[in-house]
Image: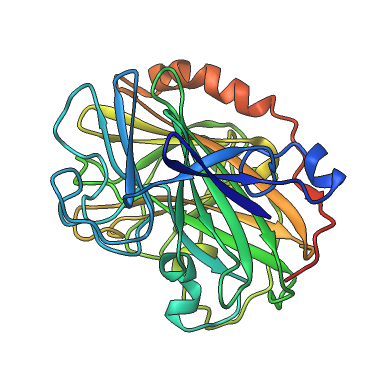
Length: 347
């Protein structure tokens, strides 16, 4: 239940507790944290500044102004990411990074259903000066309710927390597939870098991974990830299941753009899969992506994924590893459970 009231003439929403279970859950977003206050943004984007980083968080509406010229509708998340006063947006200006792209269950569906996060209405909620959320009510087809929190930390790192609750039993193969895309603006190299090895090897080292074309050798899984997902033979999202011969050792990867490393870091328990495309954002604009699978989902249960995106000067792989160490350690020590049952009725 949401109660709205005015504070200093500003409309504020307060989520009220509907059950003791929700109030006690280790929630990080307004999806289940019923004591979290917020205000609904009057515009389609909010600018976050901290450290040397400026991040513009946008809902999935089209924007065309001085801050986001030519930003297309359907691309949510970080519409613009800059560091150190640079003018260049590290993401493709028409698109976005950490963009909530797909909901799927491995079955063949029309494009608008597989891309439902692009089309279903999103509400931009301002929590405080350094934190915003994108709330999406249960989507028309899948019935997935979600909140994505973007918080800019003291050093400019972006922490993204995604929480969702399946409200209907719509996922026919028994799992929920979720996919995020980051469209990179004209980097010198299309490659991503991570620590790992080839499937047949035993020693780990730095891997420089590229994909020869969209959908080919696109996804890299963890060394211990032996999960197999049921899917239709004609499932159209070619990045999701077309695995490479590489296996990553640590839930981390980075790419280089404008002498800056964009570092993607994840919690180990989320069992993220890394994906990439050499042309996802157009010629010379690769997509550096990731996906999260929720197995044996339960209607009404809340699920949570947490990652961080860091932008640091690039020297070499080892320097990126050292700079990212505090954030990787913080994510690894996060013991929040994957799902918390709720007592709210399924919708």
